[in-house]
Length: 202
Image (cartoon, rainbow, N blue to C red; front, side):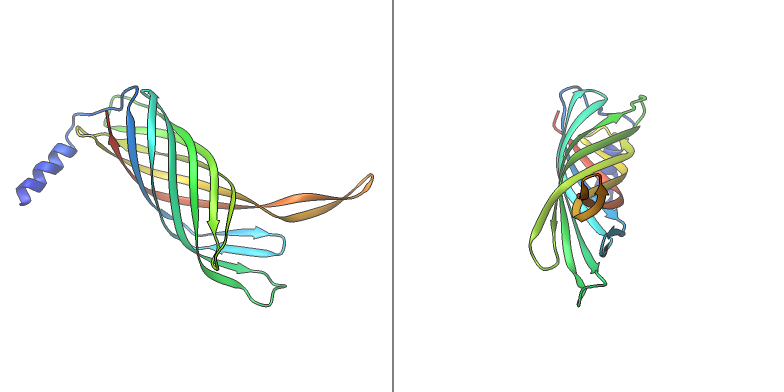
């Protein structure tokens, strides 16, 4: 049994490369550790805990070094809302559901390990600790190294940053004609480190 495992590993990570060609479609499976962060707003702050982000998506290559990507990610986490003027804080478990469209550029140098940079835009559907959800704008930037193999499978090691932008009340400013209410926003910045398993269908 051990011999079969060694043969499989040798085939998967052999020095030959199966590069993504023009017109390739890759199924990506994502898994990463996302660090905790604080979100500040006018009347308090929200602490978002750390946890696992996972999901899947498709990558289409109109050119060999450039891809268009559509993906879904889910981040299950704890949420601790601290509002000093409130009688009770809101604590519990929640989640972020990301639907993002974007792309990657690969700096292909002919080696097995190919650096890349990418990004995306979309929405974050936030589930609160006690039910309900809220949909807001989200964006992502990322970078990493894609390790090609002789099989249809590739592995990418990646760092990424996803931000959710949510309205959080209004600020009042005095103008020529009197007070003016301006929409205020809260920003979350979630940094993650993880891996992507890609399955090339072409």
